[in-house]
Image 1: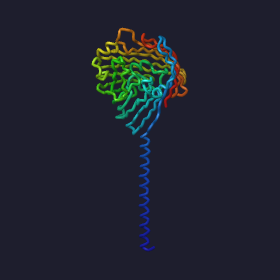
Image 2 (image 1 turned 30 degrees about the horizontal axis):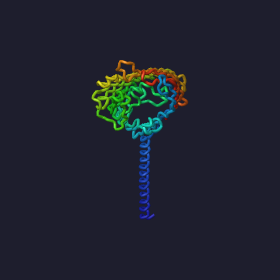
Image 3 (image 1 turned 180 degrees about the horizontal axis):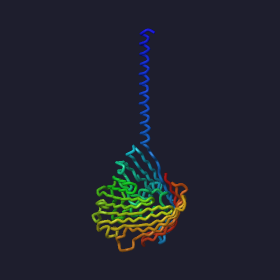
Image 4 (image 1 turned 60 degrees about the vertical axis):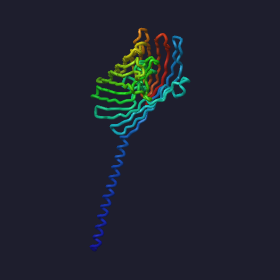
Length: 372
């Protein structure tokens, strides 16, 4: 082989080596891009879910009022969450109540509403923050209200009329998880806007973050302890600078104190809760609405994976500051059947005692609920 041929062969060999190296680098870069894409796809996960409940109420008035005899798709809720990365997540719930909406003058109570829509940020191993539309950290049902998670067709009347569940506001919150036992929550948010025309009832003051007035914000703090397996003890203090958003000069600040216990030991379960409001001003005081409070006790026995029995006694009063007996009392007892852990069939009987002018309803409730 001539020197020219030898040099040519060497050049071709070197060129082949360089080409193979470049090709390998290209393949490595392509593989790295694919791995990064898979990692981002893994982190940026979108999840869907929901829950719903269908109620049949067969309730007869005991004092000449209107019976409640109806079948109602009480709630249909869709959940969507998205994990942008390991530190930033989004959660939302879109709710339809009573199937549809139409002219309220025609008697429709249907509602389409955003129940939750907030961003959650992990700031450290123990501290997280969230901002947006969120349910308030008060009571037992407010944050966990899917039908398979509680006894009884209807949500209990104390958390409905006093707290009130599911009460949502717009704002920001911090959560500190101190080990496995202690959790601290703090929030600043929009507040309620009840009026004298609504007898200063706290439930009727919910604005649901729909062009909600924010002249008078609200502040919430909660401590929750779960140091024993199956036991949760919690207390919440909520303060609003003006319960009417400064619309009523005869009303003023409002303070809510709530405490509860949830105990699950083997087949035995117990829920107990107290909640009480104090409203400032001569307006609420004049009609007894300066004090609004209630409590309930609910023992339960889940004697198999699919069957559970419960009884509940509730007492609540949105005019507890007056001198007359304006309290409502209700006893419920019934059964839950879970054909699947996320599907429930409920049957219960309710017996009410109401103030003289209120409609007293006794009878049966049948419900179907699910979550996924």
